[in-house]
Length: 506
Image (cartoon, rainbow, N blue to C red; front, side, top):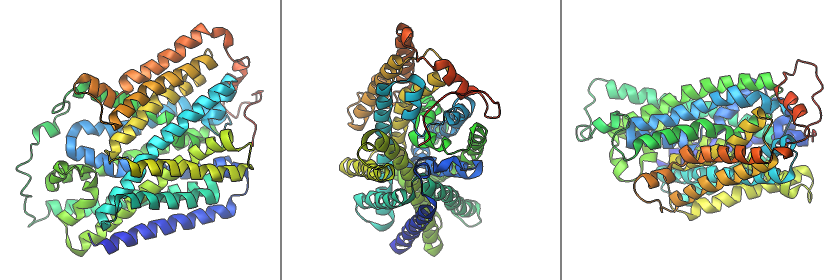
C-alpha cells in the first residue's frame, strides 16, 4: 500500500475524532455530563455508540484473521459477541438503568450496602479495562506498521494520545458523538471494499489464485475438526462471549446514559441488529483471505488480512485507496473502543481513588490519564499476541466476575456482600490466573492447556458457585433494604411507587 494514503487516512480519522470531541466539550458542563451524558442519550444514538465502542480491534481485524487461520469454528466469536446482547436485553439492561447508578461499583455498593464490595468491583473493572485496552493499542501498532512501516509502538501511542484528548475534553457526552460516528465509519470502511473485492473475485478474466489449490479446505470448513480439544474450546468460547458481554465495563456504562429502562431495552434491541449486520463483513474477508492470502497464516500475520486483501486482489491505485479506507476504519475501531474503556476505567478511578482529593471533573480527567497510560506501556512492552484471543480472555474474566454480580444482584435477593466479594475474587483469580499463564505462554499441551487458554467453561460456574455458596452460609447478612432495592430495579418507571433511596445524583 502507498504509505501516503494510509497516513492521510489515519490523520483524517484522528482529526475528525478530536473535532467531534471538541464539540462535546462545548456542551459538557456538569459532572453528570462527564459520567453519563446527563442520562439523555436516545436509543438510536446510544446503539450506534455501543456499536462503535464494542466493535474493537478484535472485531475489525482479529475476527477475520481467526476465520482465515481456523475456519468454521471461529464463527462462534461473531455469534457470541452478538448474542451476548440478547442476554443483556432479557436480564440486565432495564433493571441496571433503573438503578440510577453511575458505575458498576455504585450498583454494587447500593445493592449490597457494602463499601468493601464496591472496592472489589472497582479493582476488577480496572483489570478488565486494561486487559481489553492492551490489544487495541497492539492492533493500532500492527495497522500502522502494515500500511507505513512505522515502529509497532507508534500506533498505540498515537491512539492513546487521541483518546486522551477526546475523553479529557468532554467525557461521556463527547465520546457518545465520537463513537456513534465511528460505528458507521467502520461499517462503511468494510462494506465498500468488500463489494469491489467480491466483484473482482467473480468477474470475468480474473484467474483462480495459484495458492487456492494448495490449501486444505476440509478441516477449515468442518466444525469441530482440525484442532485438539476443539469441543471444549468451542463451548468455553460460547460461555465467555455470551456471558462476558454483560460484565464489560465500557458496555454497561452506556446503559446509564439512557433516559429510562424502556429506552435501555430499545437500545439493546437496536444493537443486536447493528452487530449482526456488521459481523457478516469480516467473515467474508476471512473467506477471501483463505483464497488470496493464506500465506499470512504461516507468517503469523493473519490479523492483517483485512488490510492486505485490496492490494492483493485489486492492486493499483484503486487497491491502495481501498486499503487506506480500511486503515481509516481500523483506526476508528481502536479509537472508539479505547475511548469507551478509558471513560469506564476513569469513572471508577476518579470516584473511588481521586474524588476525595480533587474536584469531580478534575479527578475524572486525571484518572483518564492513568487509565490510558498504564495499558499503553504494557502493550508496547510485551510481544504481540493474537488480538481476538486477548479480547476473548478479557471476556472470560468479565464473565467469571461481574456477570455473577449483576445476575445474582438483580435477580436474587439472597446475595450477600460476603458472597459477592468472595465470588468476584475467586472467579477473578481463577480466570485471571489462566490469562496470565496464556499470555506468558506457560500453558501445557493437551486438555489442561485448553482449559487455561479458554477458562470460561469452568471459571464462570466457579464464580457463581462461590457467590451462591458463601451467600447461603452468610444469609444473616443480607442487605437490610434489599426488598426496597428490588422494587426499584424491577418496577417500570411509569408505575408510581415509592422506590426508596439509591445512589445520589451527583
